Image (cartoon, rainbow, N blue to C red; front, top):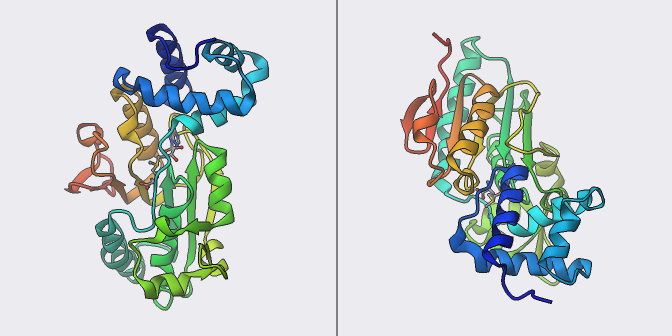
Length: 279
Ligand SMILES: C[S@@+](CC[C@H](N)C(=O)[O-])C[C@H]1O[C@@H](n2cnc3c(N)ncnc32)[C@H](O)[C@@H]1O
């Protein structure tokens, strides 16, 4: 029974499985990390070694385990107001522009925002907090934020909206007090209902199209970095097709997609806009 570290052959089988199911491409340099993460699933399910776990995953009976496996492999790290400059842009520039457009009769009083690969909801709720901080200006608007992720486990956490200190560490106290209820023991913070109700969470794999009405702004950050180039291209095509004319795409600092964003117009290192009229 060998559960110390994957052999090269075993690693390749798992790597290809992960790629087929999520678009994530795990480099051979991560063999120890992947071995450790798979070992946690072995323990949870009582599997005797890597091979029997792999055989289970690819069998019909293993279908339910696939999600848990992908969750164990993924990096789900996130926190509120991660890369705060993106939220500053959203709050001060984007919202101002959308309000101005609506005053000119060029946009209905609706906003549709997508946090794609939202992990446990920190990004989606940060956007909802930005909207709440503009509630006066947006008081008769219809606001909708969609948070999606491939992993059902993180979405359940998002739905619960209960977070530990680490998730809110960088958030100023006043913002925490306004938007969270602290537990009696001071160990967890629950997002307030008025923030939660703006956000809907749904499972979605970025490798597949999402067939819903288009969005005014999409955040896709710290996820495509784990994909190979071919998968990134597929995901980006789907994201662009979900963007409204004149809508904005916000990308993470190392997403590696700058040369696949045609026909979007580059506005800064993190910000791209879809033209109003495609030529
Ligand atoms: C590091 S988190 C990023 C969370 C957030 N966007 C942020 O920047 O903090 C990456 C998330 O991508 C999700 N993910 C990985 N592959 C995915 C896929 N093919 N479709 C949707 N989500 C995926 C993971 O489950 C994980 O929650």
